[in-house]
Amino acid sequence: MSVGYFHCGRDELRRVRSVGDLQLVFSALGPRQERTGFHAEVRIAVGGVTLAYDTFNVGRDADRTRLANSAYTKLIGGRPSKARPERPDYPLTYLKDDLDQFCDGLRDAYLDDLAPLAMAGALERSEPQFVLKPYILQDGGTIAFAPPGFGKSYVLWTMGVSIDAGVAELWPVQQSRVLVVNLERSAKSVANRLGNINEILGLDRERPIDTINARGRTLQEVAPTIQRYLDRNGNGCILVDSLSRAGPGSLNDDDVVNAYCNTLNSFGAAWFALAHSPRADPTHLFGSQMFDAAADLIVRMMAQEKLRGPMGVALDLIKRNDVAKHPMWIGAFDFDAAGLFSIRRARPGEFVELEASEKMSMEDRVWLHLTRMGAQSPSQIARDLDYNRTNISDMLSRNDRFVLVGTKGREHLYGVKLGNTSGRATGGQREEPWWTA
Image (cartoon, rainbow, N blue to C red; front, side, top):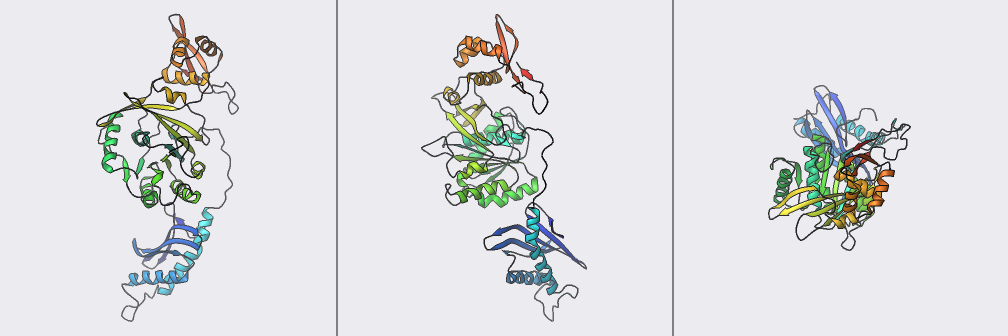
């Protein structure tokens, strides 16, 4: 770091100058290299009071002179004159010189902060850390997409409440403070959904969650508010509904999409954002491929509705950086005239179309089935999944991913073995398995 500069917040550089009873603070907010030069919002303050500030190319002497004159006028209570002389210990030329030196060193201080470091590898193998497993990584970004009407917002708000309240009924969570950025819906609509979800998860209907209601605005407009929130409250998890309201420009433009994703990643917090699929192809995210490049995880959401009963919603992790493959999550969302009144994990066979979309081998489908249902007999598994009983029985008895846990009548009961199911050594040591019945 260049001498004399220090960080205050993530994107602010400061330098302090003490003169007699004065302690002046020169600060630069959002320093950045632009096409026309190095820019920042430069402030001059004394005693906690801002004397003057402006955003400009810090290499322009005219702009620095104007800022110095404005700050000095406020410092001595008016323009320097015979009746209002300059401070003998700190005349205007000193202030201008201090500002020039501060601005002259800004670019180097900024570059020092981005200087390469000798980076060592981790001493041990470790699993990625999740805020909500397996769909939201700590310090990572996730985009979930689907056509309109597929329950995206309900999933987002359910995840948000689960994380904020530490409720692990639907997904494993690491309790964290949550900020929801609502760019899509009215505050009244959001309040109704939030109350219903709170009640479903066993919480008070009025339990609050930090929310920016900015319907009609863009992500670019609210980004400074989000950053100020994080600076004051610490990094937690940001949920955005939705990227379709990110800002001006086409979502098919690589530069536009890069700018949106850079904004999300610049917050330095876990984020989960909703997006849409093209009308003609629900299997892909609408917009530039830069969305795919920027997100650590991409989730395809699917839905199945019936004439009677709940709506099935499936979450399929189709892109995963440094994350192992996970089975598709399927939930049942039930509605009545007043809105959502029930959320639960779907029962096997309840949403056949969604289950059929998950391309899995017989072995993987049986493993997933047993993790959801607990120990079962080969006959029951064959009936639930429509497989041949003999094939199921042979596989269970010979595959080390499954373990015999007991009997029921004349039939054996099998559960799944969790942990290192391959039986291979991991990082030089064999992981002792554990299993569930």
